[in-house]
Image: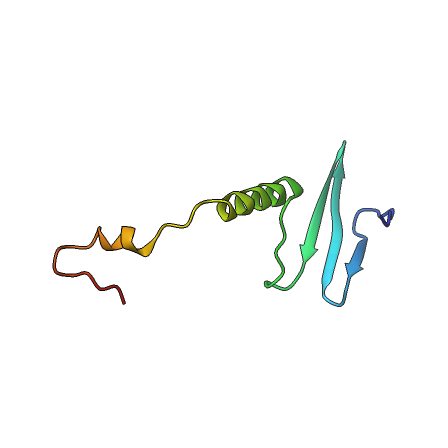
Length: 81
């Protein structure tokens, strides 16, 4: 892990197009500004963990056979495009 010391208004650059700026420091909290392309996902760590857990849970669910969906269609309309 790289550990850096920054003051208010100072920044670090990650790769060619991500910049993290220290906006404010109050007590035990630091406000950060992150400049990154819209294609880069940025999440708080606890949100990232929850997304990973939900993805794992979704991957473990059983597959519903197509026939189960066909039963939901009105009579006479048994084809699904």
